[in-house]
Length: 123
Image (cartoon, rainbow, N blue to C red):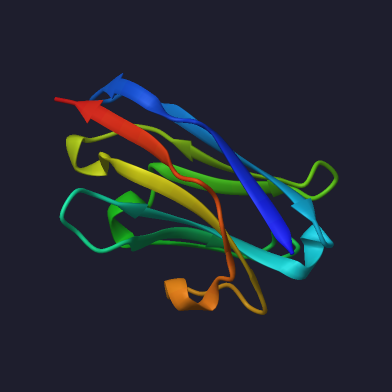
């Protein structure tokens, strides 16, 4: 079992920055690839970014490339999503997720989820 507790998020103006954090507890953090997904009102939950167990590999959805950065600190059991140059289209509830095996863009590959945190970008 892995428990994921998110923090960060909030309201920011377009062009601003936010950092999301996700603290993991439970079984060995390094067993899990980690990801961030988001869900806007009336839309499906979509992949945002993922990072491999070691942190050496990352992946991003095209719409956030160059603006968002995913990272992890295995010593602290933490994963982060630094979001810069935010746009109104980034408004959503953001979720961190943990899954055994290689990082993936499909939400069904992840077994554990954080509680979600709201990010609102005003234009």
